[in-house]
Image 1 (cartoon, rainbow, N blue to C red):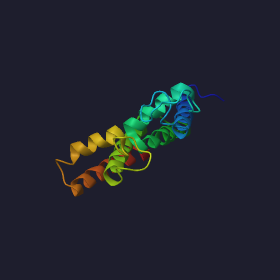
Image 2: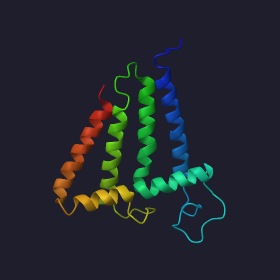
Image 3: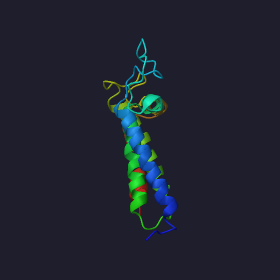
Image 4: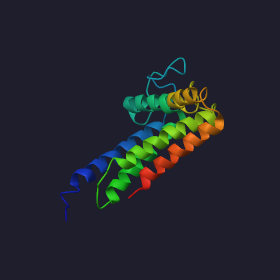
Length: 165
């Protein structure tokens, strides 16, 4: 039997899971030589990304913005979509999404701080532009223990927002 109250959230969750598949396949088949990217010269004539030109554009932008932290995006959106499908009540459907976005920011900053030059990273480092920006904002103002405390507090807040029922 169809629950008409849940139908909009269920449809949104299914659309979100479709987006997860698209972004996941785009990131998995990312090639820096694909046309929107400028990391490789000469650029490839044809797009090698499984999701076509749109997938190459999404993967290139996510990799530049988040570095290796781009993999947090399909993970976080997939977890939100599944939690929306499994919940009986939807008092605050955006709360887990906010928590996951906090965790994405903490993950990118931590990647930049702990492993700034992972293989295959963009020029801005393994945390992408977000990690580089957060690190260059925090590092001159705080010492490493203070940054670690701030990031762990934000990570704890993100986990609480994700798993709070």
